[in-house]
Length: 305
Image (cartoon, rainbow, N blue to C red):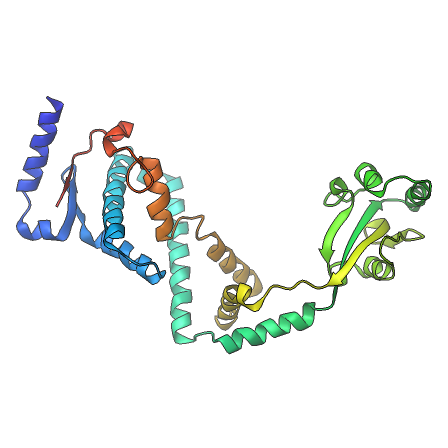
C-alpha cells in the first residue's frame, strides 16, 4: 500500500511539472524539483580544480546532488536549519568561500609570478641557511640540581633517563631531552652559544643559565640546514605574497592562512563533496547500497528526469 501511495505521489508531482520545468531539473524529490544548476556548479568547481569532468563524473555529480536534497529535506523537517549552531556554521562557510573568492580575484588582478616567488624563496634561504644542530638538554630550576646531574653523568648515568625523570621542559623531557634538528637562532642566546661550542657527543662542563632555569646540554649531531625545495613551497609563498599585497596585518594574515589550510577539513572542495557524503549515505561512488537502505530516508520519493 505504501509503495502504491509513493508511486501515486510521484506521478502527481511529475504531471504537475511542465516540459520546460523538467528540462531545467535533475529530479523531483518529495515533490520538490532539484535544479540542474546545482550539478553544473559542482562540475564547474571540479573543472576549475583541474579535474576532468567525464560522463562518469557527471553521473556521480547527479547522484550527489539528489542525495544532498534528500538529506536537506530531512534536516529541514527536523528544524535543524533554525538552530544557532547551524547558523554559526553557515556564517563560517560563507566567510571561507568569500575569502577564497578574494584571493582568486586578487590573483587575477595582481598575479604572483614565478620570479616574485623565487625572490622571496631566496630571501628565506639566505636567512635560514647554515648549520642545524641536534641537541638534548635537561632543564632544572636550581644550579645545584644541574651540578648533581652533571656528576651523575660522569658516573655513567644515561642522559636520556635523567632527562625523563628530572627535566622541567614538558616538550622535550618525555623524549629524553631531544630537541630535534634546529638552527641556533631558535634558542635563547645563552643556550645557543653553549650548544654551538660543543663537539658531537660532548656535554656542557657547567650548568648553562637562561631565563628558563639551568640547562645541561649534550650535542648529538650537526648538519647543513635541510631547507625545503622551491617547488615544494611555491603554493605557500604565493599565498604569503598575496596576503602582503592585500595589505593585511600579521594577525589577519595568519587567520587567512589558517582558513586556506582548513578548507579541505571544512569540506569546501568538490572532492570532499563527491567522496565523504556518498559513504555516509551508502549511496553513490564508494558505496554499494541504495538510498532505500538509509533508515529514515526510506520515505524519499525520487524521480530522475
